[in-house]
Length: 237
Image (tube, helix red, strand yellow):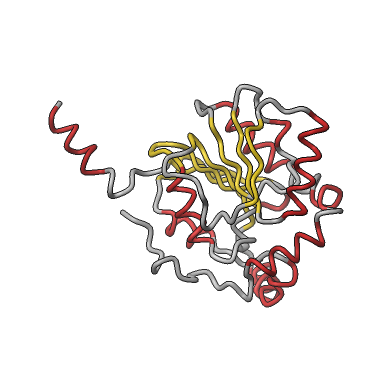
């Protein structure tokens, strides 16, 4: 079943979030990002990288690599490609990579994750940490992550989702109109994201404080264009 994306239209309200506003926000954040967000989001990053280090996957795409905080934690036998839309954040990531010497790093590229340049099936696994709330079109991002990941590969999402608690939800909705200014949407619905992804969920766990952030591990499905070949092959056995 293909995810219901209305041709990748804005099923999630974008509240004025576009690439220009994202770039502006992270131009402001780049110099202080590690100090302000490094420790706060460390547990989610650590959980995602430990998961990837422990499964059978060699070439990994990290979407929204930012300043590269996660890069040193990947095993040295992995091959990591990181992409980000922010020039300033990538500059910090390149400085980190040069200072640390990271044999697992294949490339750091400036790229819109909603419209990637990679061919289909380019990666064994794809991870997006704290990215879905940032991009203008999360459903388009999910579709692109599935396209560049091999069928049966792992797709890992770490993100903040709308709270199930009434008062917290009211606060998130009140903040939503400020999304373009603060650089992320606070009211992303977990249920909607899972329905749009249209993939098997392997596991879900809480990360970070207060249970508002979750790690979701998906198993990538075969695209419709690939299924007839798989079915035909099975029929011949």
